[in-house]
Image (cartoon, rainbow, N blue to C red; front, side):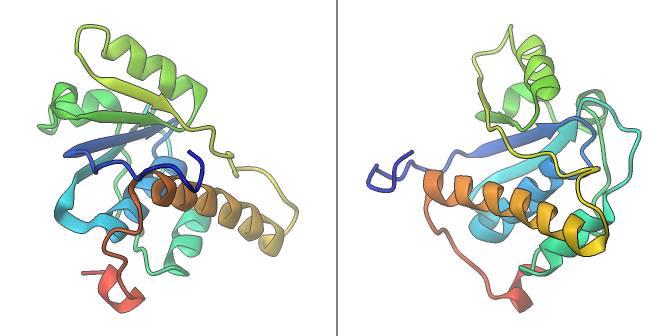
Length: 164
C-alpha cells in the first residue's frame, strides 16, 4: 500500500502464521497488540511447534517495548484445541510460504481472507550476535511497517505501557 493510500479499518480479529510460531508470527502478534490494543483480537500460530520463542526475537521486540518472553508457540491444530476456531478470524496473515499453503488448505471451506506478507526469515542469518540482531531488527521493522501502512498508527503505547 502506498503512503498516500487510505488506511484500512482494523479487522475484528487477525491470525498471524509462520513456520514454527517462534519468530515472525509472535513478533507480528506482539507488535500489533502494542499498536492496536484491545481494538482487535490478535493471535499467532505455526505450521509446526518444534521450537520455543526465539531469544533474538524477544530481544529486538524488547527494544520497542513489546514483551514476547512469555509467548507459547502453538500450531494451527493446537489453536483449535485451545478454543480458537479458525473460522472466527476475519483475516489470516501468512508470513511464510509454508504457512500460507497451510492456511489456504484450512480455509478452503470458510469465507476467510488469507494474505501473504513476504517478511524476511532472520533465523540462521548473520555471523555473531550483533549481525544477527541487525537481521532480526530488519524483520521486526518490516512487520511494523506493514501494520502501520495497513491500519495506521493505532494506539501507539510508550514502552512502559506496552507490557500491560
